[in-house]
Length: 460
Image 1 (cartoon, rainbow, N blue to C red):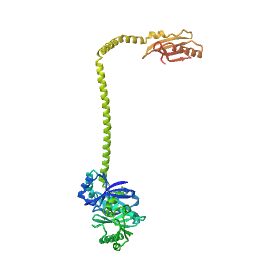
Image 2: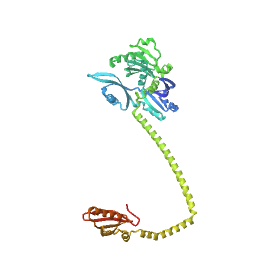
Image 3: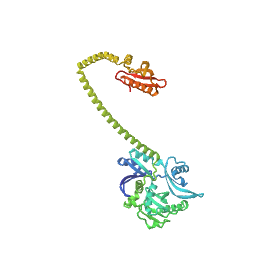
């Protein structure tokens, strides 16, 4: 179930219909007709936020355009370009177009497209008044488009046959020629009576002749939409079969409401069933509506962000206030312990004064002494080797010892065994670590590099 506010506008008269649509059944809640000058008063008292508009300008253009079927995806741009060429006086306009059949031109197949063009300036004042009252227009439809879609629902299972539909509007009657389920031609007849008049039959017959001669179609029948029945005298005057009917969604409505409010009612059904079909809402207004929605969304986002930041600032302010309170309490506690602080500073100065000789003594005791390193370097005397060179060098955090000598052995294996014993003995001396060693088994000489880092310390 959905509620729709539908307006019909022809430049002088406004019809407003508030309707409820449920299961393809339309119920009118309120219907009014008033001059355009009273439109502001109606909008001021109206509580609706959105509406749909049925536009019926006195001036519009209808054309037949032929385009290749392969260019179907580009029809919107191509059709508009063709209309601009055909009507250079049209600057800002909206169109809707429908493919109504196929044509063979110079042995080539083309799509036959019916195009209806409406100047945007006609409805500009109407849109301005609606905007002034903060109401959004969701769709704008041409009156013939909405009525034709409703009229085709009266054709049962055979909507593709050519037909002429007659619809009474305030001050005029519309003759709509439809073929293949699409509207192809529109004719307006000035008329101030919703009933069918004798002169109306002449216009119907003239439209039938135009269909024969220019459109090359033969209407199956003429259908009067907003009349429940017709007198036999008019049926005999029309050159094709003639009948009167009410569209199926309107059969439960009082006939006088159908006769008077056919256009806004058809538009309400149009918006409920196929809102995107035939929408001639001016592109500038459509872009404005999109931008308005984006700005509204952005404003809401900024509002939410502002609230979040405000909450964050309040939370931070509370935290800062609590810290300030703690600092104030700490200052009060410290101000009452001045004597303790003075005693602490005095003891701290005494500790620093005493630490100076202690630091000197510690550094002296921990410094590496070459004499100590030589004293610690004790290798057992043995007839298997003799030391020729013993050198001590200072390094960064250690003392380096270089030992060179000869090995007294009879063979290579004995030489190697004595050398390994020397390296092992040197590595077992406290404070020493062998960093490199080499032996020449032919010359029976050896060389060992070691590091000394103090008694009880070994470098791994």
